[in-house]
Image (cartoon, rainbow, N blue to C red; front, side, top):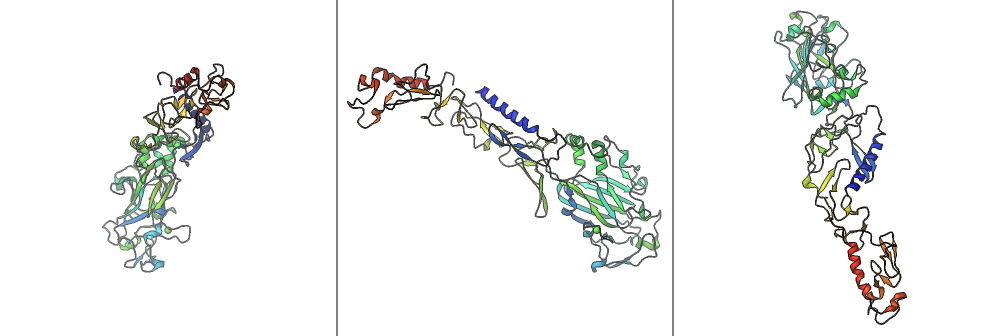
Length: 501
Ligand SMILES: [Ca+2]
């Protein structure tokens, strides 16, 4: 029995191995959660680690401003060009569409001229600080895959902190500090992301690269995701396997690129100069035309789909998992603790699917030949273990090699599988019967029974009476002779299972 099970698993492994050889040797994209393969057991599912495609996450964001009334235009307000304090012919008026600058203009389709943008009130309350928090919430854990890019319409702020939350805004951690003078603003030495390395990639830095005020043409601020990826994947990100390997084994690194919320803390608007021109405070304000955030839903490598439902992103979980991030096992699939999928080994990773709970294995049907079942992950099915009574198969419904189905026994009969019914050399079949494939005796027309040991007329109404219709040796007498009386006993002995079963 064990040999046949080993052979069965061996055949399965050979089949799976040959299927695996057809996977591309290049680094995969983890875009398939399962595929059908052919094994000795028929078509079965083979599972692999999978993740949703990266996409523009701004479509799904909810924005909150603090203070809530910080947007310009209520009441209408005149503002000046920062580079020229006497050019003050611009007006912000929330009640006029052409002159309003609401927050949603940070997220609309850009590429048109002039840009559309959100704008704050001016710094008319100087020297009270002009602080604005812009919070972007997804209500879903997402993994950043590209740089965060913020495009200012005003000068880039003199001081700003980009923060992140991993717990839906309950706690916040700084992502990066931005200042014209890092030492003065945050008591930090200025650094660039290029000063970091694999070992210091998680360091939170203050950069002066993006705070050059209005003197430069650039209005863009980056949070450099790709430069950080490059420490592991190479400058052109050609070795993503190395990056994914690191993400797989270093939770801190994985968490670094994972967020539920971002917060842009604007602490001091661009002044363009060391001092603030108190005579022309209408020159100072924040204006942002565009924010870009690219990433993918975090589904713990258990989904490729991520859909929006009731204005919330949800992973379309596979591998018997559930939850917004596929972060737990489905009911009745808690046969072992939940685990995230793994990028390793290359190229298809490890699915770590949830398996049925032992208590919920309702299909442990072994026809009474076993009382124990086991779950086979590769087949995603439950099979009977240690089938007795010469049986084998998922439900102990087949006969072991060398044993044959006893057609006269039910599947749950201990004698359902019987050893060699007959043998032509040993002449087990009686009364001229012929042994067919060691399984059954083909009897002459006048005889019946497993070993052709019975006269067919015995089953007829009235029995054999005095008729002498049976050919051959039937002429020896009308009733069964002593030899025939032994035949049922022989049949019984042949059907008895061997010792030890
Ligand atoms: Ca815009």
